[in-house]
Amino acid sequence: MWIQLAIMVVAAILAYALTPKPQPPEAATLDDVNIPTTEIGLPVGVIFGEVWIDDSHILWYGDLSNTPIYASGGK
Image 1: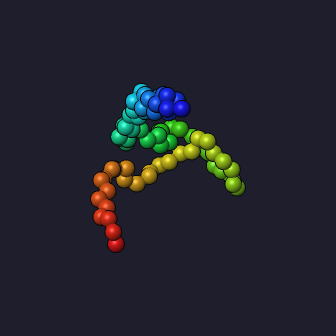
Image 2: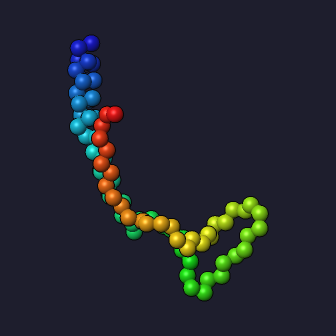
Image 3: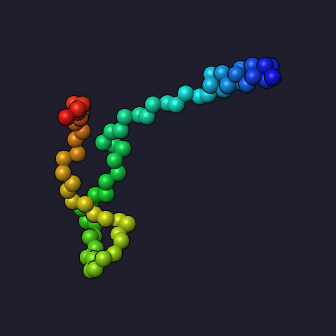
């Protein structure tokens, strides 16, 4: 019984030691954002009613700048 317990402990330690460590995610940039835009000369369709459009046209979408968030803990 003690031999089986020792083998189980050694196997658990080896499994923990040989587990690959996860890589931290890369920081996202504004180049990673895929926003549909319009181009000069591209026809814009006229839509009547409620339909789903896969190829939408966005003329302006506000200020796409990233600013750090400083949050204080507590109330």
